[in-house]
Length: 499
Image (cartoon, rainbow, N blue to C red; front, side):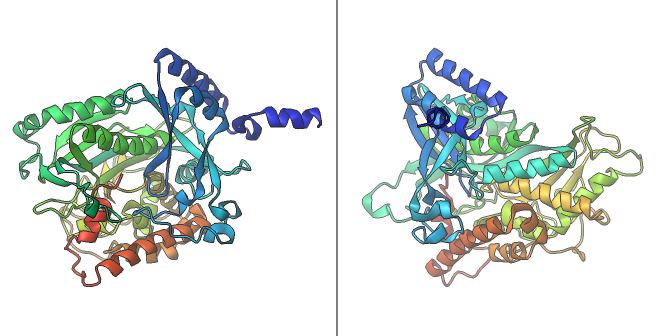
């Protein structure tokens, strides 16, 4: 055997394929020290799947350092799962029905840790955690892995001279678990969700007394989130029964999307250990429960000057010309983007009419919560940004944010004008109506040149098939459910305790 071949075999997976930057390699050395110094016993290796759900394996600490560099094998069928964890694609056919030869035969892919994401979990004793990227055994990136897709969108934006900054404003429900529903007859597929009781009466928006009533559990959740290093800014009691909101300071690039998947997973795990269920389902099937949204705050940062690229140079305009074009792209591609901002059937139960807190048309307005895009800031304000109010809390953040980048770049490339500011309150106008149901959003995505160019035909077709399988299962289970306002039992089983 040649010396070159012997050296190639001696190299670990990361070295062999050159998968880490110098910064990541240095961070990995820090992880080794942290495992030893903190006497960690376990390390969780996780990757975000196509739905933004964290999946992975837990390794004993003595294996973790090796696994950091050699990767962790995972079953490739995980990329074939819908929201009920059913396998949608024929994984034993050529290309696994996805046109990807490496997926055939339900073989393995490799999770490769991003050492810069390493955390010690505050609610799990002596346990570390690290977020991973997905590679085939030949070292190629898994082209349908959503963290990688977002990284590619960021790279395209960087080539245009910009960074993406995003802040999170996330609503959710927090319930007290009364019955875990673990009797054998409840373990259908998906299983019956836990039975719960409310934590607040609701309909007393942002009152101090209501906050104080739930402060003990919110304090526990807050401490877990802050211990992870997430940039938490506020905790709020929302309007509906058991409805809350956490907001986070803006972060640049990959960090913002990583923060969202870690926040959701952390909140659910920490809450469960205290006997509570945190649900990111938009509108649970519980009496008097109101819908939750995820409002995404976003701006572009000029990489050369480090200045906000949306700031208007004129006192007459709220936005720079580039900001107006980016906004024009968001509006022009809004219908297709809804497949990513609102990816569940239940999420469309938010859209209930003009001048509500959820948008129904692709319009913009200055500081108006009834519009899809709320433009924040005055001329010259360094904090000028957009708030997209169309998203739901279960959206995959990598796809949500990538869709915004691609839509905005399309607007810049085509010099799109967003049109006039909507009134306050705005009246129904000639602007495009946002999709009223998931299948309408998928129809718009299917013919979207913007997103087919950005994400690629392969991913768009893959995503369409996943979501269409979800719709088909719902229609088969609930053939008589046609009322848009009604939340079905199928939806509650599917999404209420979705990780």
